[in-house]
Length: 218
Image 1 (cartoon, rainbow, N blue to C red):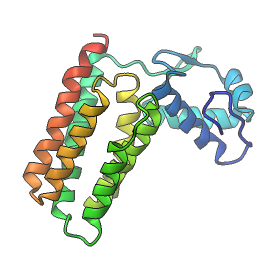
Image 2: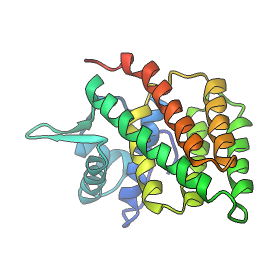
Image 3: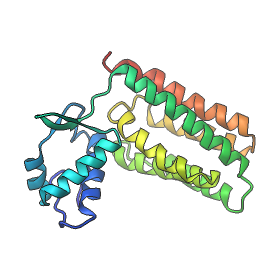
């Protein structure tokens, strides 16, 4: 599958997952927007798959809170209110704080320091500021490394789901501010101080929320 929004997939068991991935990518790139209807026949033609494959993809997107289904009107991209976004940011703050705390506790595990530093540098050296999705891919790998170091796979499963529909086109921090935020989290985790790591991680999400929430409708 390409990333143009007109990709072809084979009608296999993995096709629905590829559609899910493309819709999520489309949210970051602006090809899909909150409130946009997802019409089954259109998606069947767009991805060249069966209707059952499209329905499976919509089912997964709905389970992840990205899509909502309306009786007699089909599915659409979920449009968050400010209160809903605030609730999701609050959950994200706790989850990332816990990941940072547990990672700090495990940071002396062989290879842990090198892994976290490597993924931070991948974020810091991303030069194409217009390629938002690639930056987010590197950010997601950083989060995945953090949860792997923390030895908490449940956090690794949860973090991407919140990011997918929280961030969307609400990236209000500059690339430099985001890199600085991840650098502070990394430094705190590398210090081996669990309380500091949790405080810094939660503070980063709180700052992001404060800037982003005014952009959501009440």
